[in-house]
Length: 210
Image (cartoon, rainbow, N blue to C red):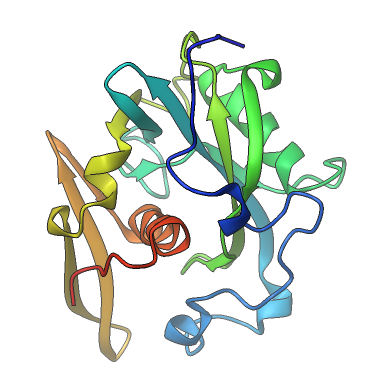
């Protein structure tokens, strides 16, 4: 790992411990309960919320999905995916998927803890794994899964002024979601919601847009 100094911009204790993945209900399940099966029937998945120490401050690694994908075409996402039966835990899933999608090997990643579980409209219960990424990593996106890998300053994502809460009607009722706009990128849906959860965990005094 690079020796660039990396002081966490928050107390690690504000995350769920790696030794005990959170078994609580997904924090947003009530919003989707009319669209999803029982929570116990949701497919298990994990993503990597990669924090990269830079001289200018901590950044967050994100990816953009290819336009040709059947689901989530062109969307911004964390590296990650469905838990494989051979994965020993959600951390193993996040590390495996990160290497498969963007070519970052596990030895360049230091897991720190979990965010809260999140339910997706596509039927997954996702555990986000917060981790430190070696700043010397070289992203090598797998073109069938990732069109681009890029970084966003963590301070930008933690600033409530950069987040917009949007309402829209879907499946018979009004629903709400968050979005960020960073350069040409629109970060919304599940990814934006997990970033909101990151903010709530590490700087609970900051309030997102109402």
